[in-house]
Length: 499
Image 1: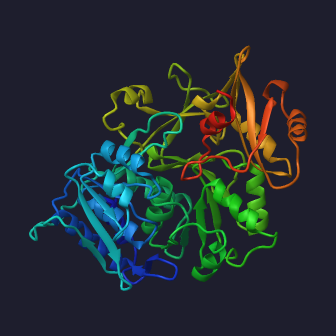
Image 2 (image 1 turned 180 degrees about the vertical axis):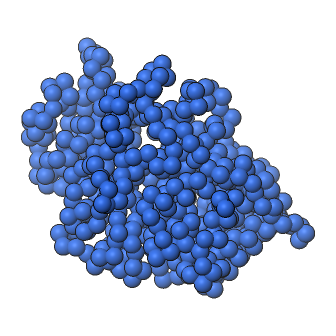
C-alpha cells in the first residue's frame, strides 16, 4: 500500500535499525524515531498548534531538526529557516509565513525571537543523550490534545524560493508531494536498508530534506547528520560511519577536491555513488570527483516546486551523460516554446514539468500562478533541451540569459569554458550593461593558480565565438552564493559592474 503521509514513510525501517546518527552524539533507531516524532507532534498539538499552522524551525542540522520537521509536518505545517538570517530577514520570512510558532535551541535564536510576529509562541527544543526530545514553552498547554494524522492533501512543508532574481515566493508542499518525492529518489538510486547517507546539505532546504533525509528513511537506511559540512572532517566521518553515498551542491564537491592531494581518501571506498544537484556541475569537476574518489557521479536536477528531484543521470551500468542532468524521474518533463507549445526533441525552450511531486500553486500569489502554469505544465524558468533519448540538458535560467544585440548567450557555457583552464577553480559569467549592444559579456573567476586577465580572455577566445568572449574579466577571492551553494549571478554583476 502507498504511504499515506511522511509519518508512514518511517514504517519502512526495522525498529532496531539505526535511522539517524549524529557523529559523536545521539543515535536514533527507527523505533525511537517513530516514538519521538509522535511525542513531539502531540506536544505541539497540546500547545494549540494544528492543521495549517505554520511552525518555523530555526535549528542546526541535528537529530532534533529531523524529528521536529516530521513532527511539525504531522501536527501542522513545517517551515524550516536558515539560522544564519539576520533579524530583518527573519522578520520578512516569519511575517510572510504567518508563523504561529518558532522552535529554537534553548537560549538561542535571539534574532528570530525578536522578529517573531505578535501572538506567535516560542518553543525551545533539546534532545538528551538517550534520544529523548524535550519541548519547553511559556505558553500554557492542554494535556488532552493529540495530533491528528494528516491526509495526503494536507500541507506538510512550506519553503520560500531562493529569490535570486525576484521576491521569494512561498511554496506549499503537500504530504503526497513529499511522499512521492521520497519514493522517487529512493527508487532512482536503488537505496536499501544497507545504505548510509552522509547528510551535508542544510535541513532548511529541499535538497537536504528530501534527497539526504526522506529518501533514506523511505529505504530503511541510515542518515549520518553532522552539525555542518566541514571538509576537514568529512572523510573521517564517512569512514567511521561507512557512508555509501552523499548528495551535495558543486561548491561542496569543489571544496572536497581542493582538500584532496590526489590519492583516494579513506572513507571513500564504500561509496556506491556521489550525487550532485541544486546547481550546475561542470563536466571537468565530475571527472575529477570520479578520478580521485573512485565512485560514479550522478548529476540530478531538482527544485523546491517539484519537492526536489525531477531528473537524474542513472547509476551504472546505465549510461550517464556528463553535461546533462539525465532522464526524467517520477514526473514528466517537456520543453515549451514562448507560446506554451511542446517542442520536438533537440529544440530548446523552457523546461516544464508535471507529476505527483509538483505543487498545485504558490501560496497567495495568483499572478505568479498565472505565469507559471500552462495547460497543466509548471514552467520552471529554466532553458533547456531534451535529446532523442530524453536526456535533459540545461542551458541556464531564462532571466539570466545575456542579450548582446539580440544574440542570446547562456552564461553557463562561458562558465564551463573558463573552468577548463587549470588555474581557475570557480567561474561565473553575467551580463554587463553596454550603450550599444544592450549587454556585454562579463565574468568573474576565483583562481587556484597563477593566471592573468589577458591570459584567461585569450583562453576563452580560442574556445568561444567572439560575441561570447568576456570583454571584462574580474579576478575575485570569492563568488557570492546562496546558503545552498547556488551562484547569484545578479549579485556578482551588481557588485562588479559600475552603476
